[in-house]
Image (cartoon, rainbow, N blue to C red; front, side):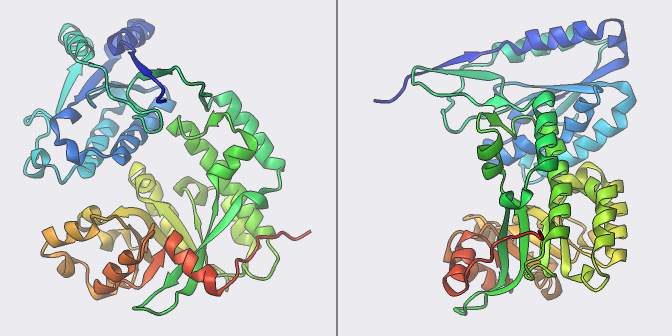
Length: 419
């Protein structure tokens, strides 16, 4: 019998009022921006967008310079210190990029004029702002949330009659304990590999290099089965930086003879600029560096372009290759790939991949043969992805389907450490 669920909605207007009350006399130093996400076509609002929106403002929230509030209709309000107004405007550039394919944003340079955003001065516009918040909160009709797939950013709680153990959110105290454990744990048990292979036609996959990464589900299950590690984006970012550094240290100690090159590491921009990366760099031979690929997430890059340019320039000067990860096919043409100057690009496979390309008659023009040679089609779960990729001139693939094909002809290599 299905469990009955009951939805309770927290009054977001009360949360906003409480935050402004805490600001007290300093409230006059703050502005607010209303982002009318619900005005976009619903088909253009994906779960990944919600995560990206949270990540966009996470750095300012962690520095106590801003606070964002989500409403059940997808709208967002950000209250921020006026000193970071330019940074907030930069965030809008990123948000526009995220929703570039929506008709509302396609042909407009002024987001405020089309009603997508509105600014409020907390010293002069407080009454009008409170009216907006109250209106949005009272529009928060119960949202149909499912127990296994919910929007983590809408302020709702689920009460179920079925006995289910809710995971606790990651907190600073828990994070500190985890980081302490990770500093002394045998990290090799958390590290996994997945091959990037060349596949042409019906030929067997040929391993080109391997991605070395941390299995977050295994890490959580072993250390913190009751904690949701990704519930808090900025705390998870701090955790990921710790994982980066432990992966680098572990790779430096790896000694089974199979990891002497031709591998990639998914890494944060900030990690490349850290002392731990310098120590890793000094521990490997100069001849090994050109066979190591550093994978950087597109979201991480756009959160701090200056740091990315600095990190990329340093890494490439030392001989490492740079791969940009997390690129969806619909955003590919909006990237200035010449300025990014990367060695490889990971394009995310999706069943609607060909629909996007068929709608864009110029796809083959702006992605020339040289660039297709740099592309890796990733998250491959079925053979049709390889057929589509081959038809476009893409020959590098990664994903569970590719790994299964490879494992059928070549055994997995265990990850071991120098004793």
